[in-house]
Length: 453
Image (cartoon, rainbow, N blue to C red):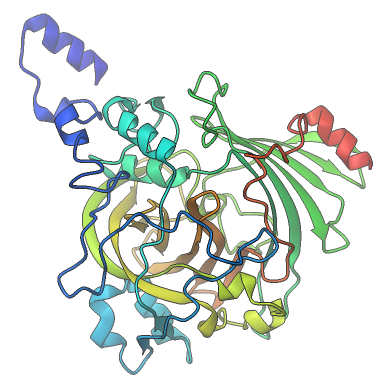
């Protein structure tokens, strides 16, 4: 791409629109905050008013909120209607093929649809960074690696699917968090063994005071993962450096070995640990990692029923994993669905590249850029896995993030519940802002000290 630009300039040739840079013009960027929301969504409601206008999102904690008690601001909302096997055909135009397949495959699987609440909103500094990125952020000539730009969101007016999926990969935060979560893979008889972890995160990409890729030393975030259960895994500690333009780097302390080792993180379609080969590494948080193995096509927008403002699953007092998770799917009254506009991004495996999946179709919420539904196909074009991300508004930050991801394997008839918080202590999403993230823990040497405690 750059060679073509230099040659064209040398010859005095006009450049076709196809080789223009990823940056948008100042004129187009001026639409942000006027014709578009500050992150690039359509601020208007839809024709039948089932999607309301965006009015700023949920950026102030509701009365009674605290770190220990996350209040559901929409607890009084009634269920508008239920989608199940008896009427799924009537709603198929607002469902993904994967969502339809789940309803048809599993008796009792249903979707409760609630009023739409466009609750995702962000701080003014995020909007300012997004506006700047619109005219400065660039990928390389292969539309894979980030060359310019910093902070979410990088491409609020995307020209292709690669830019849209880059928006998904990073979300605004306080710059760090201390989270408690669990993952499990129920058997067909309903048995499950939760893997419980405490995750301390230093989010450089989302820290207001870090201003560039160079300043962050190429690192988007660092995470220390401490395994709390089950007993045979407890005491293990993992350090991960998530790189912006490279695969993750990781080190592990295992109690039985009493030393720190550099470990391969895999990436791509390597199995995600402790999930019985039912999820790949790049399925974590719906999608993560380097995007070089797929061609990315931006397919425009459509309306879709998606998980949104999920509260009951993770914050209902006294709820247990045994009550929440059935043998084939999560209890259906715990998942709230709303109608939202989504960007459709189709990822097709590149010729000569290897991956378990031949095609993936991502549905990205327009207000948050998060993938909320994903349909995954095998190399023969058969629907294989269906994913849903439990999107939750965090008004104290403010931001929107996942509090759990579900991946359903239609071939195996099983699913993975990843990163849910049903029985876990509260997550401190403000740890970065108020210096509650411990200093100096994100090195292999510190990992050794932590493991010896």
